[in-house]
Image (cartoon, rainbow, N blue to C red; front, side, top):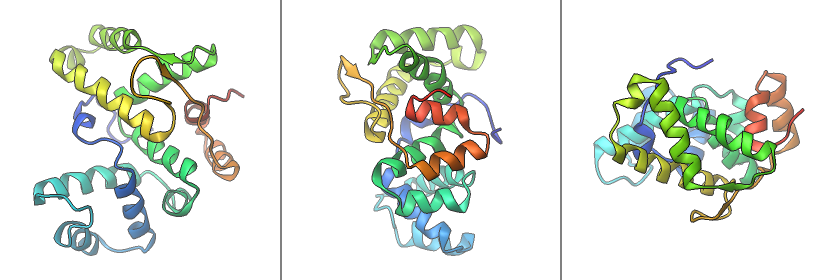
Length: 202
């Protein structure tokens, strides 16, 4: 499913990047080559980042997320309605971050399925503890890493429109996605992602 499906904690410094992802999607739709992309993003500082290293890091992160999407989905990120566009950016993160995907599938989706629409600190601590027991990689991370991951997960979900507030009690929301986009994802076997993004079960 994913090229590299290892547990990573890099998302804590590489969050939602919504506006940056929209800009990158527009460039990819122009079919620019890698040299042209790097010229615009890094040399011309498209994302208005202070250092060249940060520009490269952000560009590489967004490109890795978007390379798994086809032209139709890139078009929807760049020019679709805001709600759908944001959910597709979230989808691109789900496709490239194993731990975040598992949190959304095992915690968020399951809570929505039983109409438990509050996301609590206990939900996070239970999930992370379970993953510590299942993975040596996750078990090796420091407590501060999990603290930062929780912060970033909450911020991503808030920015994507799936949380009403970032502070407890955090009311969870069902995503609203364009019908053509939903049909496109289902046609390509992405039902589990549609369920995560919209709360719908088939």
